[in-house]
Amino acid sequence: MTESATTSEEGEVILLNKPLTWTSFDAVNKIKKACRIKKIGHAGTLDPLATGLLILCTGKKTKEIDTYQGAEKEYTGKLILGKTTPSIDLETAFDADFPTDHITPEMIQIAAQELTGEIAQYPPIYSAVKMGGERLYKKARRGEAVEIKPRTVTISVFEVDSTHFPEVSFRVVCSKGTYIRSLVRDLGMKVNSGAYLSELCRTRIGRFWLKDAEEIESFVKRKREELNL
Image (cartoon, rainbow, N blue to C red; front, side, top):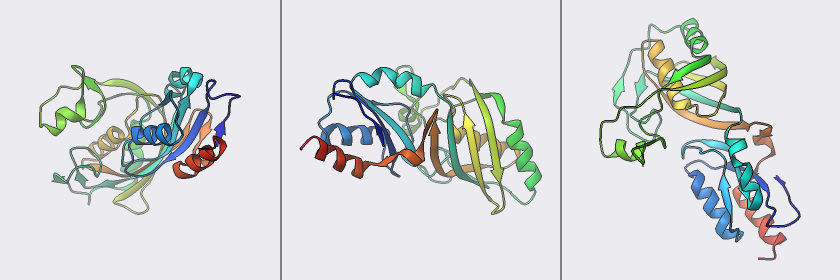
């Protein structure tokens, strides 16, 4: 689904459902090349192993990107307690095992509550945060030690369901700059264990919802027909 403008120069806001393993730039490049769009950008990166709502802006609508990037976001996902990876997700191999027998549902609920509100969060080493002009994940992949500074973020909602323990389902509503992987890592530490993110989907950015987004291939097909390409 899109918010169309009268001309390609005016641009449009495109809501896409980013597929698993695609980078946000993969989606931008696909649309740019297939639909022959000169000016296009995305409003908020999703990790390759995450799915869900990705906003693309074209033409003059690219001026609105900062507004969408700063908007509140909602995610749903799953974390697994008892193991960790350097990237805090399945991009890298497991590096440690931790006990889980002592963890109760109440402990998980309390940990989530303690991570709700305005908190200081350390971004993951495997992230797109820049240090010295270079993305952290590039330094991490070379095995370089880095000193990461915390950032203040707001977690408005952190709901957890441990019915299928050690898997924990969650829903998070958060501010700009929040790393869900960091939230997962910190929850694992608060219950004296470890944790990694096994599944993540962005369901909302501001007033835009995933349910209104298009699959990339269907958008390309429709747009090419509109443009007689």
